[in-house]
Length: 443
Image (cartoon, rainbow, N blue to C red):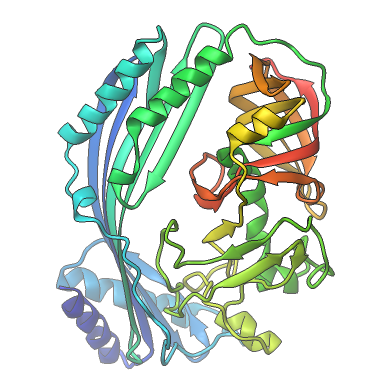
């Protein structure tokens, strides 16, 4: 079917005198089981397919998208894309379509068992998780979703790139009278997720944080679990594109090649990492190259699309978004190198620290110094003399990422982490000195 759709696109374009065309065909099936108050209250499923068409005509380009994949719908979308393109102002920086995509290789991220997951399967897993939370006299809420997707790019110059993937996500919040706990995981193979373990973790956090103490604001040693690291540190990677640096809107301006973080901070972008997800090529079909973003604290490489590479004399790294777009490119397969110290070992060795499960409502305060504010939630604890002593009232923080990543004292092994504020990444837990809490929140 895909070959027929692409052929119809190219034939319809040629009929209007257009020979330079790129087409992207996507398909996705999503199923979601949602629960609250210790009961499933929603089960939904959705299937969608979209065709996106981008002609290149005399230095102009535009895009039209349709979910009608019959002959009439395809022809109408091609006609619309061509009409919009001809009305668009020429772009002197626009490149011809990709003519070859050397180095393309598949990654195995499609698991039939996940694609075939049924409402009954999800209901059984949810029921087990609810029972665990309910046994602690707590209330459970969350989601369990499974999905499969396809992304195929083809252009009239013979480039074809395709990727299939499945994805499962399980999130649970356990709520007690004056406390809560949370846990979440995602994986391409749903069998890699233990709903039981997540439920036990959430329930344990809710129980341990009951009757929370109120501590004064100030600077504390913190132990940030992977989800908290993800949601905070993940805020900076949309400024690793060459386009943002070129336009002077990145915190990396005048800092590339310089040491910005601590010696123990190494970050790369790796689409082929076994715990990552997504296609191993970008929005034009260019293979994604592994990038060393930060090496032992020093800023080394940034993401570079074909267009920005042509302007700067660099090589494209395969991180461009489908054209036309305003962002240019970005690394989307972040891996922060970890070490061998577990969270439990960090706790056991700490004289005093604050253990943070996750963060939310994160907003930027200073874009160049990368200072952010936000709040802790769903499991914030006081650690004293190597043990969790009590839950504490949630804090608001005001923290610079550059400062934070210069004061990392210990790292756990890196794991795939799933949060709320940004996309999933492979990150470790971090013990950080001098983390700045500015006030106690009401929540």
